[in-house]
Length: 395
Image (cartoon, rainbow, N blue to C red; front, side, top):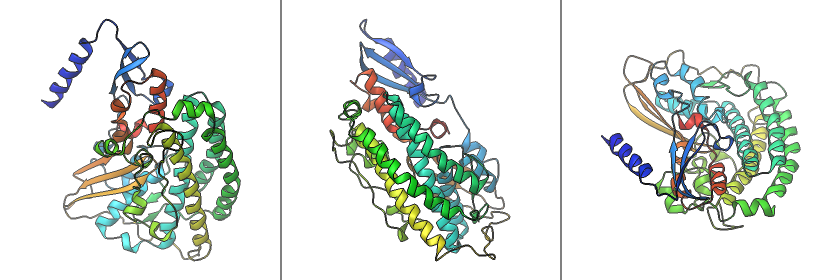
């Protein structure tokens, strides 16, 4: 019934356009829609009067896949949600199952620090994609090349650890696929030393560039109350001035033992919560992730260093036996709050229900509000600042 009502409203909206207005399709093949997203625009000349997103072209059926296999076999599917942050996806899912099993307090510290290390490397890689593609969306080609060049170093390290280039299946329930390779900590240190001046160079290239500022400052302003009402999270929410990061709020894994700040927008170049603020929060988060990586390397090299008797699979269960229960777990992904809702059942290790709450989906839902009354060219800047991955939107 609700679907029919929504369809009737949509048809009324499209049939009611005036002679001066046009209906324009942006996507699903448009490069700036960042995947198979179709935006149906009602325009008056260059002014966008209405944005109607159409999704579902890349349906991965994650929820139903997860309900047809056991908990362990679902981990490769979590990699394919936000495929630019596979480690972070697996970490959130695994934490939920471990808490239901009562394993979370037994996970060795070395395993926890390795998890955080690879997740923060993946966070940097994801933000580099966001910044690089955002630059090319609005006409800056050099940052795109720089970001992909530096991301390549992270991809090589994660491939070295897991054996896979992008879809890792590295973080397992109860542990890890394998310990870090010998020399991994040293290579991470080399990367941090190499990358810090490169990040400063990237920051200077875009953040104070007058053309970039003109395209992003005062564009797509997202007030804090609107961000909360739409369920926005991650850099989208923090750019509107709200200091909300689940790594601090929930204090999961070993994040409480680490020192890092939570960057928020402050309207430095325009209004609080504009496209420039969303870009800058991601740049500043990369700096904080580098701080976290340095601390993890230090702990893994001293307090929790490798030993011949250490087995990262020691607590990996052969079968996940759970009592019937409902459980929700959440974690801070590069794009915001990734949550998994589990409904388990007795006498089977296959869940009755799994529901993923992808941050890209909620963040994208605010686009019709941000896109009203803007220029078509500005809509590209607004969409790029949201940083979506369609694999997570079309779960």
